[in-house]
Image 1 (spheres, one colour):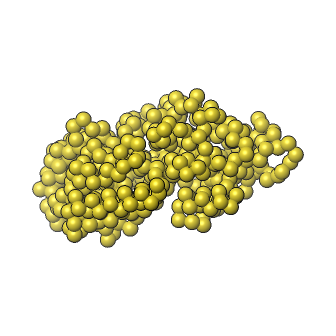
Image 2: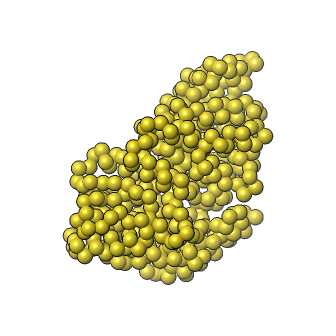
Image 3: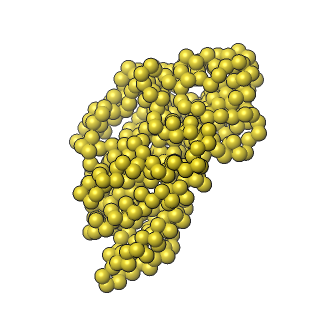
Length: 432
């Protein structure tokens, strides 16, 4: 379940949401378009996962461009992450013309020269078609280069059990103080041995086996405290800033307070009606609503933790890029523009999975006008993805070890994050 996040954050989540967000069968698909070398026909290879809507988009495009043949291939599963896969493919001369990837890989691919800046081919002219959230996550390059076009996204939502809140006479919290007040009242009302909890999250390292979920939970607290992993131009690590320490200490205090289910049993605890507040991706919120009758549930914007800081949450996003080995970049961009700016494709893909389209117009239909979706789309305005820097997997693991040490009480939050800072700074220096 957690791996869907980074679909979000890496798939991604990180997922497929994210959840992240790409989703689909990863086996090598059978494309309806012949993989031919017909004379006068431009062949473009796309690394992706199997999606019916993509086959439709390819067929539609080829019917209008008879001189273009688009062949979809599964991304080779031969290395720990996409950057390693791309490095090997570029070196061997076997890279595709285009690829789909979580947004947190795109900036690294661009800076390493694996993918190209799309500005010369017309990307800047279509920027305003996309939501600011998705465009900024897809193109976080401080120099302003456009390395990818966004498609589908997913976010982390703040969910609550109305019945438990009503039982103690409180409203849905909108600030940190209100959240603590709710938690204390839940604890006082139900006691510590009832199996009822105010909040849940990946606090226990022994039961949180998916590292990216544990760190992602921390990041949306970090962002709401006004901190970040790096400075604005991604040249300096800031994971041991006062805001970062404050965010980690807050989660440690949550764990030690006695009002949290520390084992991260969101599916087991929250949807069984035993947890008042939790966070999860949009698809699990809607699937939970459809399958659970244990309580009356709702979704809200994340509580504000610090005055003046927006209620940030986590974002998982999938994007499309053109590789540096593409011999026909304009033709490749023309297809990606055709596919990524078609709202019907985005809606057809996103609706069954409860993903969020990246196109503004795709969000204007009646489907997204329900009360819950209005709240989710409001939260979407404050969604952030993890940073697209080289070596992120190792950096994310260093931060997880810091969280683990602080949660286990083997290190203070400050000392733990200082250690993560040293590791990340060393990695950055090695990369030059």
